[in-house]
Length: 155
Image 1 (cartoon, helix red, strand yellow):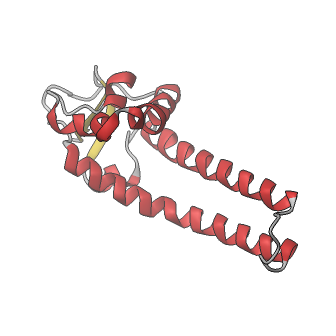
Image 2: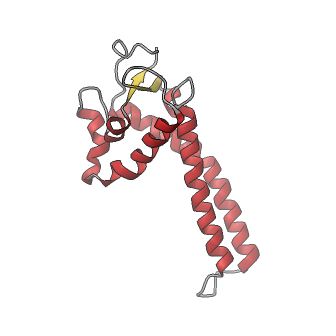
């Protein structure tokens, strides 16, 4: 168990920087997948002069999008449910994600937090669901409240 009471919460800006670091980390597999997709398109289709895309290219695009979603999900859920409780971006800045009682996240809770972060929180207009992390008492964004988690400085 982590001492949540003594650990200060990670505020909006430090979490934003951690998010940017994670985006760069995830850019590597995304670039590889997009490169493979572009290679596949040129292999199958030759040039993009035709107006109608062949079905294999559409299928490949859908598979690539699904792979990117799965990679992003597994990266965040596996890392935040690990004993370190943080993605590489959060680790670099000395942050970790814990349950409100200070315990480690389960993979299921980390998954729920991830999908709330990318599917529910963005539905709130003007990014208020994210900006809540700047103004709430324990610096919790909407997805933290929904998943019953805190982002804290690790000790």
